[in-house]
Image 1 (tube, rainbow, N blue to C red):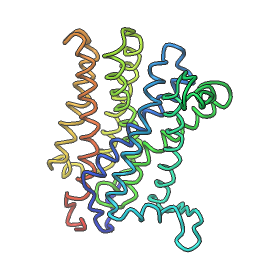
Image 2 (image 1 turned 180 degrees about the vertical axis):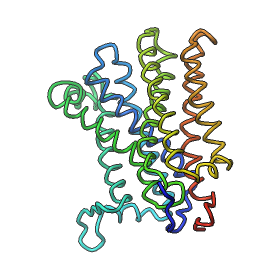
Image 3 (image 1 turned 90 degrees about the vertical axis):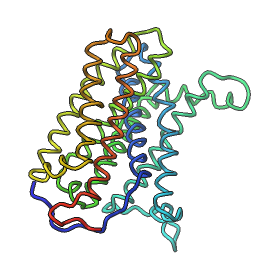
Image 4 (image 1 turned 60 degrees about the vertical axis):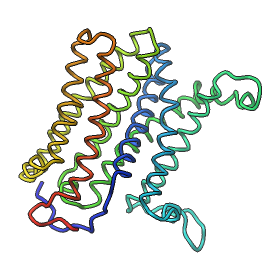
Length: 311
């Protein structure tokens, strides 16, 4: 793909946005995994269902606060969704920020219902007992199936949206590839799988769950390696400028080597460090997921491409 020659003003994104993308990817990936586990996972995947119900909503709440903080004025977030004069809902389908705001709101609502159902569990008495019907509704039957499908769809949309938003900002490197939506999605799924391995591995004596998670994560990490290769290929000659910069080295060392290749090796050598092997692999994969977003977010703002970077 030839490089774009005209760029909008630098968005001046900082670590708020990096963490927002990272946590949002994990939230979306967790919901996507939870939806799949509910639909096809069977009874032995109940620990996964439990954690995928608990993880997304708190991360989305933090993500929303980070997004509002980055905007500088909290009312800007409100104004992306509500018209000033009429107070009617406002959706600008051509605006990635408007689309993302509504996506965050709807996905957060679904995640909150799932979170509440997991917290309520089988409680019968007290205040929470009044809502004992909620876990039955979202956990089974036709309504439960529809709910899990919605979680799966919105989890996918939100995890991939963060990469699509980067591409739509029309900055160098970001706008020279179409792979960021897919790359951020599969990276979010891999990071979510890593958290699930950490949460289930140290509490569960059922190695079946951890083994299944590791197997899926292996495929996710292999696919992420392929997508990183395609991302660099789409950059063309710009790829060499990117890779020679510290952010390119962050991607190669932090994501490709430490976050993907080493965890894959550890998964294939599970006895190397005993029970700590999957834990170390999962921790490194999380580090790699953060490094990916850090490298790409800052590269598009700070690497001059033939003098075409806006300040």
